[in-house]
Image 1 (cartoon, rainbow, N blue to C red):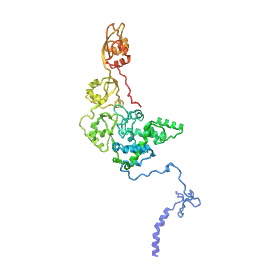
Image 2 (cartoon, rainbow, N blue to C red; image 1 turned 90 degrees about the vertical axis):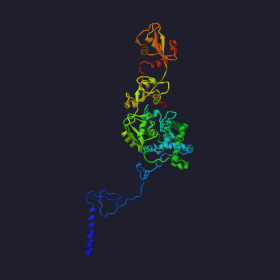
Image 3 (cartoon, rainbow, N blue to C red; image 1 turned 90 degrees about the horizontal axis):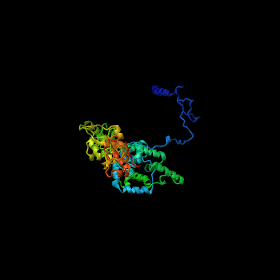
Length: 515
């Protein structure tokens, strides 16, 4: 009897829990499939003693919903080596041709060249791979600067394409890359990468094929479109291998494929790749004041060449805060720069500023006005011999007591330098004829009436007596009188504008290189 009582007491908790699990009608009762329906019944509450019934009818294939497509499985740990990360992101179809094998042989037979360009690329690859992954683009595109510039951000082609992505001036402007006398964003690591990936996404959207997109990046989208149209008209293929194109473009994708193959399996090509850690190489640091490039490198404790490699868009010896408020520094040096800058007590940060020429001047006259040696002014502003600086041009000059402020945003972003041929003018005296006046003499020698009046310190309406001496400033080789007129008006007119008198010079736009 005692044994039965103990057994009953042991069952009480179980029976109490079973009662709690039993649904109460009307309080969100659960439903289960019934044998008759083969599915869920919305009207029959589940009973505690019902057995589960599984759906019948066999397995059915999943729909072709894009959301259900299989995705690649990511490793739990990211690779320590950036090259492995690049390999995992390869997504472009492989190209297999004799041209690919020829390029493989070309690169693999030049290990020193491959070593140099991969060493240069080690500074930029992590950032490029990050941007490609963020945009869900194939990682092969991170290798494209090997083909374009050997990863040299200072590279300039014979067609005036610049930077590691090799942007032409007009294309760079289309993708918002600043180009002025103080900076060229076609060389900037971050800005040029942004523009290049924007451009390639645009091209892929046009052609739906990465090989054709790359052909358009090299040859131009209009050229590829015309080649496709011509191929369709003639009934030939419209793929990269089938289109008729220049040899440079024909080799373009095979070069990239060859580099891809070498990076995928360097041992088989007897190539040694430098170790590149899968972590950022640089970070950006804000600057609030103009600062000399040499001083910035010193405060960051970075060799000057390495500093310039990360900030290649700054072509002048000073960094302008109003134009580009951030600089790139190796990851471990950014904090050192900030600390050293805060503690700096060595005087002004920048020894250079900008000066706008108030008139058309010779470099010697401009140098005298700003207190510099002519040779230094020519060198820092790249003024060739026998050229004059036009009015309104911006020159980089040494700071002085009268020029001791940071460059304004307007000048930093819009500064330009235009030059004019330097024609030597010689003071010439000619005799006035019968009924000559300032206007008639000005027409004869193709100069402005005001300029001729200033030369002779008379009014513009003054008359000259017959035989009166009239002062002119003319090209040294020109002769006075009819001989000057016989040489034509254009040369004299241009020379007169550069004579030593006050005259307004028309602002000239910046001329970009031929596209």
